Amino acid sequence: MRAPNASGNVQNLTLPGFEDLERSVQEDVQLVKDSPLVRKELADRTWGFVYDLKTGVVKPVPEASS
Image (cartoon, rainbow, N blue to C red; front, side):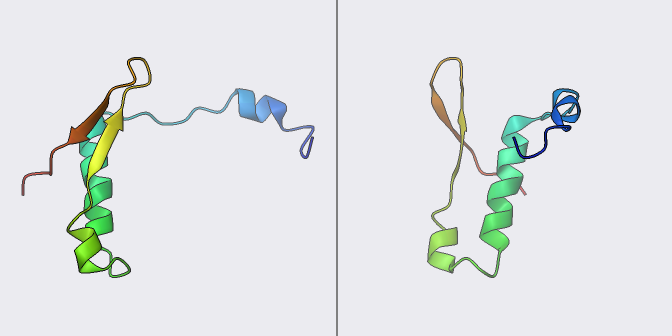
């Protein structure tokens, strides 16, 4: 174990959730599309999806309206 004294910290760790999962995906996709590091032809073909862990269904997320 790399940090033997850290297990208590990890067990008490609270990670933030999503208020609106689709909106979060839309924001992430927009971030990629707006990045100067991503070529335009790739940005234009960038999509977001939500994977439901319980059902195994993958659902495309529509683009955010302006």
